[in-house]
Image 1 (cartoon, helix red, strand yellow):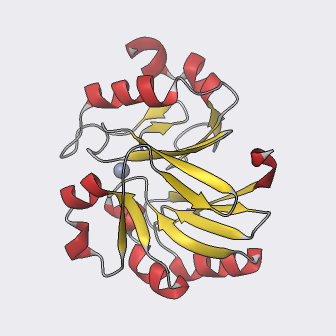
Image 2 (cartoon, helix red, strand yellow):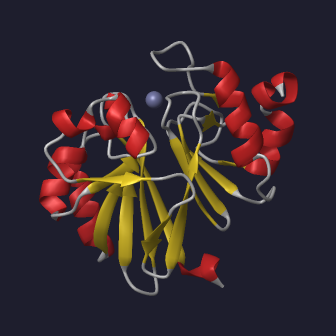
Length: 207
Ligand SMILES: [Zn+2]
């Protein structure tokens, strides 16, 4: 019954058009915001309009376009942010961001009211990138896009690691699991694990 308690909002923010997510537990009104890439005031207003209590900002990875709104949004909402500890270290975010940073670990569960977001370490696009999984839904950041995958020509990137992450952390999930990516690079803003399994050329051709 857990899936019926979840409500997910998707918005495009910032100059690099990042998908930011507002994930709420409808039973308790608790929520998290994933990857606030900018437009912090609008994001705070969004949460207010939804009438939810945001308890944490979560980041799929440490790239500037995905953490750009962390500082100001954390201040506006009086919360901290959370990402994999290894990722915070790699990008030196403790020095860059003036907001509390919760260091997540692979396999950890982030509680959001009655919901639970499981942290799945998916290195490849960045060394400490993660996907957040809750039954029926997967927030993939720049690891997996609709019909594509994240860049691996950047510092700390590895195509081999990225493909391995998709194989071990994403493809075992149910076909019906909705994929919520970090950018609108596909022909639709969301997909499913089942659709990517048969249509994504990086999966069909390289795995
Ligand atoms: Zn990225």
